[in-house]
Image 1 (cartoon, rainbow, N blue to C red):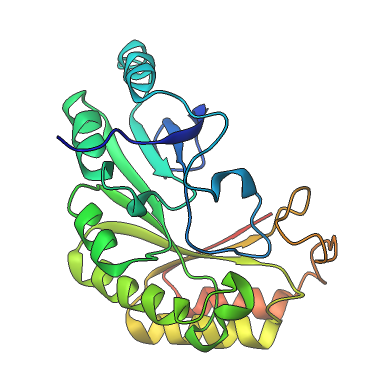
Image 2 (tube, rainbow, N blue to C red):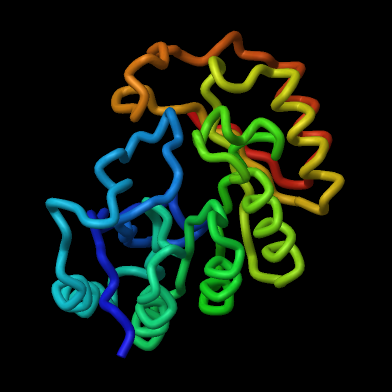
Length: 231
């Protein structure tokens, strides 16, 4: 019997986390990276102080079967949990579409979960060689980009997105990242400005968005058939 999914939080209704769907977001507990701008640091430890029993989650979803279109498994990093694929199948059996937010931390675990997903929001934090500056983990960039290749080969609907803190990535590196993504075959790309209200690294400055950078955003729109700027 697979282990029950450890859920550290829940958003009952969102229109932002699965494109075109009314969705619930389940925040899975645990992450192997220590991203300096992480705005959910309570989800990093493998066990949390406010976990929601999986049976309670299922009861909640049963009451929402006529109201919601989809359930999104977010984190933390959901693909690190052995119980994720079974949980995704339980949700699908209730009639929901299944979304997955992931950074592909462990390529094998990501590939396994991908087979159970209808849509993936895939985090690409930086160029592979710059990853450790954000995640504080050596080799994290190579793992992320291997998982990206798996995603693009799978045919599963997706969006790639990069969270921007201008102290960690500058406009020139962001453009180079976008160019590499486009060369890899990415068609849908989103840039989202970091939330600075709560970050793992207290030494990071509480920055607002840099200048509007219209030339950069126009270049990105030229690179991708679908480009979104958030925040």
